[in-house]
Image (tube, rainbow, N blue to C red; front, side, top):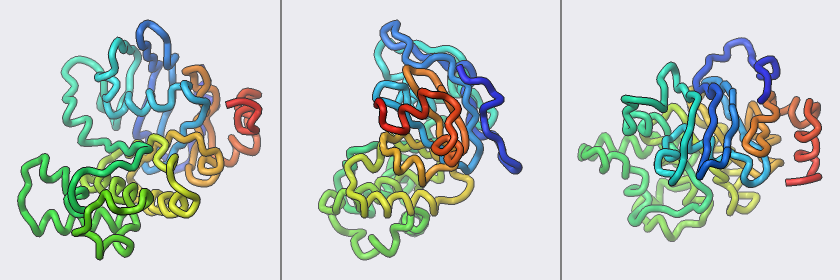
Length: 263
């Protein structure tokens, strides 16, 4: 467990997401252990650490996909803007509407680029064509994809490059204006140029959007987020500003991981 004094806080920060003593067991194995972590609103926070260190499990604790994990148990709390995400009486759908998740594989839904981005409206039964069209354009502009894809809205999304498919997925994730965007290795299959475009899109997101990024790409973790949280064996070992974590890590395990001695 890492003490609260190590947690960075800057003037103007407002707490958005809080993990308090968050512990997760899967098949009686402790996968996350007593995580205390405060995420400020509108910040990008990278989760780094070796495979199996608990990064993806932490994300699934926010979007409640953890509830679908066989033999999973948990205790502690996860609080989103004052609302408990786990416990009796939690509205699962309401929580999921406040978050959006993007994964590594870059798979898109069947249909056109426009249909992919507009899919959440279809789920909600919204049929107002003008409203949907405006929302699709706003979402693409929010992720810096409008100029890139405006002439391909009627194209089969599966025929796009993987980088463009991830921009489509990102636009779909943002079309409902989620509070929290969860990214699980979103650039894992992208080449350097596509990664650069995707990162630029993340940096251009509206300032109130809070982003949690799980990544093995340490170069990405050094340039994209405001904060970095280092996980090892299910524990939060260190959390701080990106510059401080990479240049002056406090814990030897952090320095060993960032320098490539293990991982």
